[in-house]
Amino acid sequence: MPLEIGRRVKAEMTGIALTVKKKLGEGTQGEVYLVDGPHGQQALKWYKPAQATMDQMAAIRALVQAGPPRGAAGARFIWPLDLVTAPGAPFFGYLMRLIDTSRFAELGEVQAHLKPVPGFRALTRISYQLANSYRALHLSGLCYRDISDGNLMFDPVAGEILICDNDNVGVNRQSRSQVWGTMEYMAPELIRGGADPSTETDLHSLAVLLFNLWCWHHPFHGRLEYELRVWDIPAKRKVYGDPVFIFDPMDRRNRLPEDPEYETCALRWDYCPASLRTLFTRAFTDGARDPRRRVTEGEWQRLFLQLGDGILSCPKCRAENIWEPGTAAMTCWNCEAPVPVPPKLLVTTTAGPHHLLLTEGATLTRDTLGQGGRDEGTPASVGQVVRNPADPAIWGIRNLSPAPWRVTFPDGRSLEVPPGKSVPLNPKTRIDLDGVQAEIIP
Image (tube, rainbow, N blue to C red; front, side, top):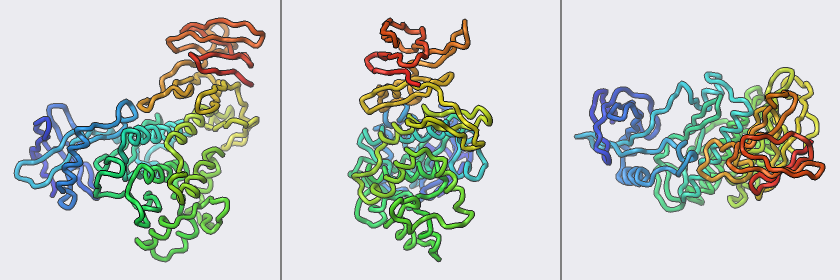
């Protein structure tokens, strides 16, 4: 039942009165309104009659009381703030933060070129933050159950994200839900009816969303989908319940058809770094068949952290390119000009080696060192590549951490570099970064 403009509603737990100012939008579960109160303007999701059940009311109360995962990873969720009711109305809704839609975009707006298309740097940040936030949610014992492009908004320039519609979040394998997901994003076992929503089904949905972000296409929309005459529920069950990856190296039945509508996907797949294509292939072959073999949030995090630390601008056209470990020479994807590869900092972490390209302004973060927590937002900087102010031809890594670094030079000399001072970028220089070992390599 819609709310009238000017209607007074009440937040249950705080007792605050709110005034409905205007309708912002509508979805399958309810309508979203702008409301005004003592704390300024906020958003109110008001449920439609079929969704305004006692179970849903109890679920919202539980989410409000529990709160989102801690830290910046949890702050990206537009979490329910309070249950809202209206005098004389049998229905209810919940209060949430208002989203700045002039800054944050939906993927569909980007694909329609209504909002800027993210470059590689922003895209790696968006992808990293998605994995980071869902990892925090899952580690707190919850599952999202409806991961899709419709529940994601992001800043196409800065790469910051927001995760919307969190009212279906529940305890993994325990809470009941009215929503099992968006069919295009649901795991095959959910489509077939052999499982309930869980963190494992979330992992499949996350992989589909990441593929859509990078390739602007669905991983199972190939010839098998193209040749269907009717795109109804039985057809979707066939495509998503027994899926074949469009780039499966062994099974070519579902390759992209030769149709202009599919050209963007093929082009963007070619732009994906090889390591990303490898994880996508695993996610939609072995991972689609066996939930135990799905790509985890931690694996996505490490990959996108590495890809973000490998971004280079073409000296000719300024297009962003991604360098990967083991690549000796690079050619710009846009203009095909040679892209020189600078020295790297090879960091040895408990999760394995990590390479940071030592370009001007490049930052060394706690996550690069394998020291980031699950509640990290933008990883805290502990070092940055700078020019020597007295001689701009000399480059170094400035210590931005609170602890000194122990540096060993190629000739065997060793010294301590205190906070605020820099280490010259000489190959074979080794740095002890507060217990984490690193070396400058060509």
